[in-house]
Length: 179
Ligand code: SF4
Image (cartoon, rainbow, N blue to C red):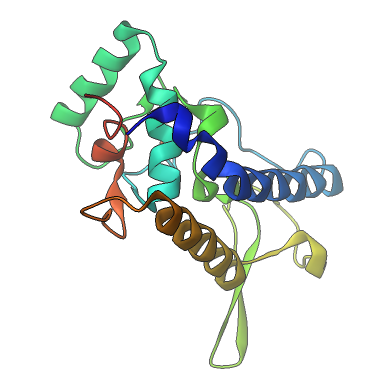
């Protein structure tokens, strides 16, 4: 698979990432001094499985990492099973390329269950906040549906044979473009 040929196929995903990032920036502005998320806080960095569009985004970026960092990631895959292998020295080595879930973790999301609205966010964030304006919350169902649609369009454009798995473990995702 030629990385240059597949680059244009990421356009929809990159637009989606920008929209999610804008939302998170707006939430940070709305709640200044109430966000504990920062470099060194890695509670959310668990082992992930990814849609192919996100797996290939990471694979492209991973290919450009220095050999020394790649070696640390490989060692992590071999020795620690539950944490994300991209978490090195308590920081993400592919932070600008991280998946959508990593961008939204810790911020208010909501879902409907039995006609009840459930709201979730990291308890380290938003201390003392008891309610959120609707525009500050992400509808997690809608987010997942949009990401699934973008992924479907991406995989259909790629036409790989055999097709990609629906979900790819992050420890395999980063090596997809390695020959
Ligand atoms: S990709 Fe980066 S931000 Fe996401 S879980 Fe892994 S280390 Fe954390």
